[in-house]
Length: 451
Image (cartoon, rainbow, N blue to C red; front, side, top):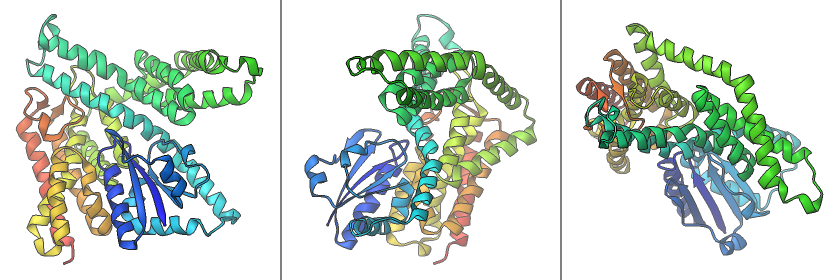
């Protein structure tokens, strides 16, 4: 029995490889031959070949982004989230084995699967856009932070290295964030034809002040406009070559562009301006409450849709030359869960297995790198005790960061961006916020977890 699998998470950093490892361990224990292709931030690794497909019995797609499914033809396929592969790899493999023998003719089950696909479809499209956007966010943020190292206003002097770094990071990478987000949401929905209207819509959203929200609307709008046009525009066979190079890109770009400029863009820009005004006028108490809520969101699903919603909101508050309190709170809250778990494995060694204690060391390095997903294996093994502890620590870290009015000019990087001058406002207090949040998580886990 040979099973094939593909794993892919939005960021391509943690979930992708954790799911692959879980499937490989599960298959070994079940005595099943498995080949897992990972589609991470470095691209596809251990790629599945045509020969693999010919000799396979079933396919497991543990993915939260858009992947090519057509290459597997009529092979029985299970499609789930990467988290499902991490939590129950053996169950998935057994389901894949049974697919060859079962025929799912039950209409109720089919309807439930269709409804689930509808619920997860929009999330997958959004996460595909986010996964392509994040490298631009990180590259732009780090370069802007390096510009600040020469002085918070040094980039204003033309011809200097600081100005060049700001131009590359701010006017270059940061300016592409929303078009890339929008373009690849549309790509996930409509494949390659969605890229042109998606990116054009994202660029217009940025120009009219509609920002991330406008980019998301543009991406979904562009994708579904392409599907509509492909369905209803029928050309003679000798003219079909005009569809991908002329008809679809021109019409879809025109429709999404006009919609943003004359219909959607204005209200969305007003909403963005309102959010910005709200953040600028927050009282101390309100800021602490917002930091706590964002912290809870970051720790609740550790890289899932709620975590990503908080992160996307925070990234939207950063602009070139304008550090953000919200971004600082979100990164602090995202670093806290894995660091807190690492602390717990040291405080209560008798409550963790040898393997868990080793995993705790890895979690520490993931935590200081702002990879919240490092906490997932522990949360999956004991969610009732672990997840509330993670949420408590992250809420404290987020609230303290906001209370101390710490700011962050970089959307990622963990402790590796803290030494950059002017990248963090209130560095000492920010470090204290992360430490206290991690201690709260570590102590709670060490107290609540059973031996």
